[in-house]
Image (cartoon, rainbow, N blue to C red; front, side, top):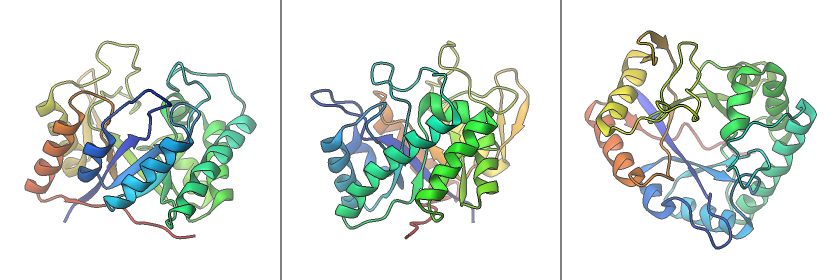
Length: 256
């Protein structure tokens, strides 16, 4: 039987600002990527989101990003591999403290936004991130864009890796995501997004924006929790996957 993990980027509220529908989305996903304070989130939000994940029996991972609250971590920054290493170490360490206080272990690390996309194509940044994850714990899973440099760097570092695909994003012929600056970057039609996910899981391919087919390995599917239709889409996707005979479950909670 085919199986897949459903993950969502959560804990992205900050201070008086509420972003996303964490409480409503969590019952329908199997893994949560929790912001660590650089691109979004704050200590109280991190603590609250972990508690919500535990309550919903959802595996928890760190979602480190670039230090850019105003840009939500989606703007590229000219950082060195050494800076990337330190940023990841710092942020994962912070979330790890909250996880331990809640009596759980982190399952994975998934970079956020621009850091994620930069590491997908930049081998040196990817290696720095993989090294940071390995040095925190070789049992942590590194989540990266399917078939990307980040996945290859994780494999070289000897840590578990998970290939991620996106339900609501379009793809370029080289397998990268279409930049959000382009009008066709986000899929807003629910049926089109569900069809794309099923093709990636059951057929191992995705249609790029130019119509060509790109091979992909879909271990986990990202569903964004900060869009107005996030709840309805996530619920619908889970139902459609189960109807297609795909088991929806976390890829494993790893203990240190």
